[in-house]
Length: 404
Image (cartoon, rainbow, N blue to C red; front, top):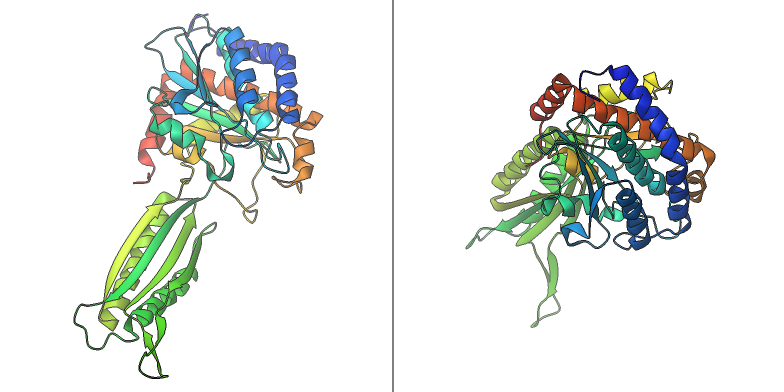
């Protein structure tokens, strides 16, 4: 097959290939579900998925990123071709097993990569299936793989997560932790009370910022240190000391630029408090483990178009539904990526519950896994065959704000 071959014929062949290969990957998804393994302990899942990809003709490197349960499976038709990666998750949760559906998500990515590899034998392509452990509980297997260079030659990445509807992607939260500390100037004669006053001034600033926050944004703050009370050794009198006081602030939002903007505004308010009380401000800010998901309009549009071509309804994620975080956000800050969703459960069945554990082995969930594999493989084919799409995806990535 050549890049000039009718794309519709190629896409039909991909769908037929997914259907032909699906039974084996369904069985693997159910087997992983029956043997849930926690973060960085997914030895069976990693072995089963790696073995299956190796049998499919992929070159598999096990234990990448100095992580025994991470792997990289490669299929290349031309070393200079575009590189697309499918991200496979497979860790479970304590007590509820696969209550986030990673048994389905991981199998969907592997099935997508397997089917695509069978169809693009004569198309310039580099296909990766990356086994990414430990997404749950903030352990961040993808972050470790990023740090060890596993994504170095990957140009585009995608995955699909079990959920309540089909989505090409949606917003995910990132967090920035801020330590705001006030101390008395050396030699100050009137520091008593001032550092605590400065912290209270800072907390008042937090309340002001909260009044006009964008949707899906939170600022949480606590007084971590407010001073001390000491009893005099020579008398029964007590004295309060306020030579140092500290607040801890957590800023959460879906946009890197907005988090940084709120941090700058809060720092200005904290500095005003320091100036007003004659204290010294010490400011420390660090990103949380998981960064916000950086959206990619070009890739999302391609994925949505493929879902529609499959006859699958596109959902609209309600603005008032809660959202979480994912280490796929960290990937999206390094390269163009999407974190899609497929319908595995009915609305109202929440992740991380026993009900979702049951959904993760249901016929609805398994059917959603196959739909996601088709949509991902079709989107990857679009990227391989369309230079304009690749250019647009890279432009969307470069135009968007990134974390520092």
